[in-house]
Image (cartoon, rainbow, N blue to C red; front, side, top):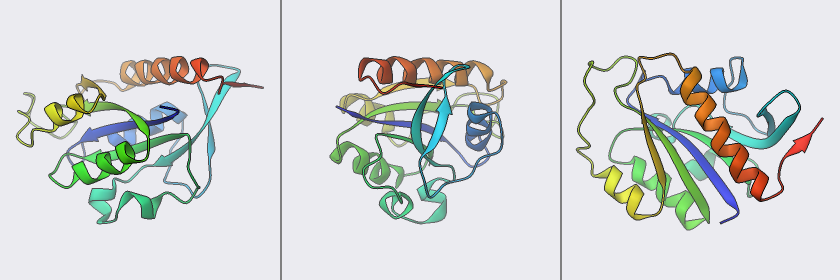
Length: 163
């Protein structure tokens, strides 16, 4: 697959927006255009960001993507039943799926939540890569792992751009 979804999954106030702010090293919101995501001091890829989850906004994800056929999409997703529609959209449009599940999230109880939606089995069964991260911890480690994954995926496809 030559397109990539990088999703952060969690309950409300779990740390999804904090993850994107740490990744971009500044506050970011859903954009209308592609933006540069620097993976180190000189190399970047272009991405489309959906910071507020489609589920929280009560919108279909395709309504939020204003760029035709973006290669890499970064997307917040909320842990609730209708999140599967968001993942199904990306799967049906040829995206590889990489998910950071913030469990527990920043505002959640201290113990991880059981996957009551069966989402883990569904995602893994569809070939997604899923990691579990503690949203109460500093975002630097999860952001570094995310950058490493994107870098490897993009390097293999010759999508890395240098300044």
